[in-house]
Image 1 (tube, rainbow, N blue to C red):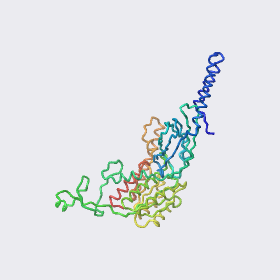
Image 2: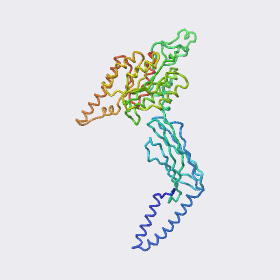
Image 3: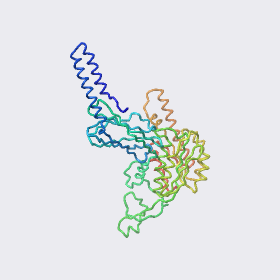
Image 4: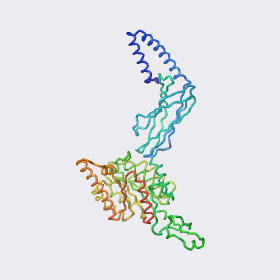
Length: 439
């Protein structure tokens, strides 16, 4: 049954019932109620005829992007066309994927005869996977608005949610913007000259004075500098811990999902700089392994592998990681290791294995600052209990800083970052190590 009764129907009917009730002490109101009821029945018939007339038609088309980006605002478009010769207003309901847990989505639309509109809304997925859209429902009304006709458009569609390609492109633009208009990516000065000579060019502000080519300057009469390019074909591996340590959520995304988005962004930049990007995931067992390469298809291989990764509710096996690094990675490489340590004891347990890995490769341990504890520690408190709690929070933050110092003590590079700043800080670290010639 596609006939529904809106609120206006019940308001009019309620008013008529009141008039009938008051018609007993006031006879005039009884006559008015009778006339009103007759008119009401007539309007119902007219409204039903207009709504269920075969010429009253609505065309609906949903348009989805090829894929959604994890943690991004993804735009969905619905085109609606009034193919009738009367104006229509309706409530549009889209059956959204169950992962989003949105059950109150609706849009109010008004269309003139023959008019077409595009309705846009945004979805913010926080889980990877296949998202299934259901039907599109429209509850049509004429100007009378006494009845509603449900128009059900069977439109099942699906779209995969991949690691964020939009963020990847955004950080690519930032990293390769020579003018550095964007905030976040640091413009780093090269240390030393362990780079391949590229060309001689005119001096511009910011160039290293030590690179001035005095012979070319004398011949041209303008300051000329030697331009060097970074060494190429260096191996950059992203290693993602997908154990229960990475399940903690911040702003809807888990730490593992933050790491996955960052892995894609930094791998893209590494490939653009002609380095070779690879991937290893692990927990209690080794997951995806992609050998470092710089082929044109490498980024797509990484994207597909990251899309399929799932968290595991078990402890990470660092002994397994050490043996995997020795077996799978040939030659000294940069290892960007995404993990999380919530206590100094957790770091102490695995520190010997991290030192052994660092002896073979250049290891960067990237772990997370608890933003909720940081915000709590920065709040003003006005009670003794609040002071105790804040002292514990500050002690926890101090312990995180001590972990960084502990890693530096053994020559292990580290990045302690807020989850939302993970991509920026990881890319800066990669560019810093590359500029220093440590890779």
